[in-house]
Length: 321
Image (cartoon, rainbow, N blue to C red):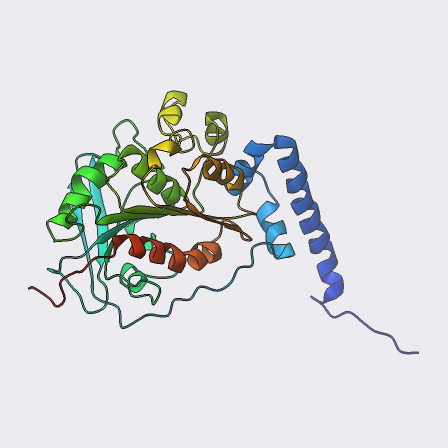
């Protein structure tokens, strides 16, 4: 008779942890179902357990790998900082230039807004600003700038107004560098919290931007949802009402919009509400995927191509410095 022994650390020893994981994950799903729509936001911020683990287990988060192939070697990058009176703090920024261009060239500009917990150094997923504007999908030479916006969801808070920083400080700084000069030469892109911020910025300043693209925007449909998941997102219910991207979506009429979200993203119900409220003609991608870096990265080439298409215009070639 042959006897089979399970070695230490083998399948037998993994059964108990696996059962504990399943209880944890399924328990989280039950909690989300009981909590309703707000539960999705709570799971997304780690307040309730289970959904992200279950999504990973079932393959719901799998997406096609992004095509980051460059058209040519990326251009240079410049980083710096300035004191923001609007934010009452010093903020960092990075400007990435397209292939064959550099400081002193007049170029259209994309302003890219980072997600919660991020900053100018990690506003994009898997690529740098100069790599982003070197992608084969980006047919129009354009620069891209990232900046520190804090964790206030890119909407004004007492003593911290990242919107005013963008409009009154960062964009003028870039225009002094010949970037984004002229009518409708600026696009705005954002991921997660930054996706919400990009939509909100275009709503608050209609006609200022040539186009806006939001990847997995962090959209809530009520102040109660937002406050339950992140108490710092809005200073008050009145602030939420003033900066509700869904309620004010009509302000985007005349501004080309692209919105992308995964169907297993905890913010998906809010994104669906936003999409329903968008003016006719908006481009949307609502497919498989989660609120993860892999989904963000997968949507960057198409989002940047969308913005490039609306920023297309003859630009000067060669360096002027």
